[in-house]
Length: 107
Image (tube, rainbow, N blue to C red; front, side):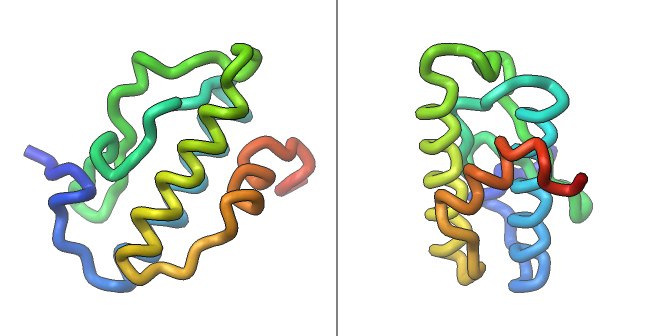
């Protein structure tokens, strides 16, 4: 069984890559799926064979939900807090939030 990210033993490099992957997943969920997880943390991510998986997506809200942007801000804060505690240099919460919602990024 794949361990929760919280319980996985990752090298510093793999932890950095997991952060990048998480940020990309958050953007994909928002931009392509039109969803905000709403409870994203190290408890709702699995790490298996060098791949990060986001779980418990069923409680996600659509991006036009009245609280979706507050949920996304909280997700960004939770993600950054976890990865900072594990030695990763993260974006600011605002930078992460903007990266997720800004349609022009990557255009």
